[in-house]
Image: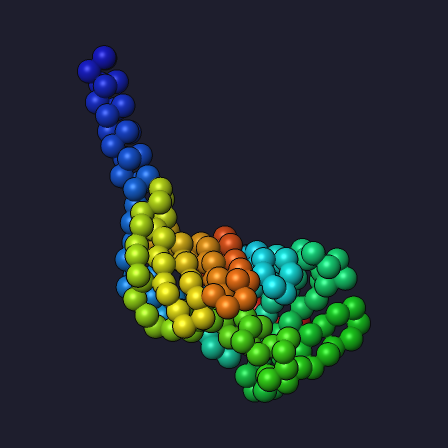
Amino acid sequence: MKTLNRMMTTALLAACSLHAFAETTWDAVKKKVADGKSYSVEYKYDGPKGKFKFDYRAVVPDHIRSEIKEASDQARVGIVAVYDASWKQVRYKSGGGIIPRNLDHPDVKGTAFMTPVFSLIMDQIGGGKPSSTTAEGDRTRFEFKTGSGRFTVWARDNGDIVKTERIDSATKEKETRDFNSIQWNNNPATGF
């Protein structure tokens, strides 16, 4: 019985230690994003535009639905932004009204309201290779030097991005996104 307990303990420790140092490659992360034809995810944004928690859904690349679940400005909670490429605009629903915004509007341009969030991250990185890769427990950290500063991406061993951090070298502004509950290729509803 003692031998059996030791064997089980050894096997359990080995399994835990292998998972604790899981590592993925940047190619696996890029493939996960490229293969994602649709997804839904909850994520928190903290940056120059405020603090938000989103219920986010995308059918890549033409349909996006973002709902603000929490915000530093409580008046924004409940706003739903919907992008449909055929409209050539993003429409925001707040209360009983719908507000259209052109794609070059500051609330829309360069945001995840019109570009699927994981595609936006890849665009912001600029297609470069990581300058460093570090295993951190059950995730891997990839650091990039971009034209505007530094970008860091954390991913799980299955290639899912779980966090990003972007720091602008000129303004020192920091922008983070924390992702959870990712469901890939689930063809989510993207309307109001």
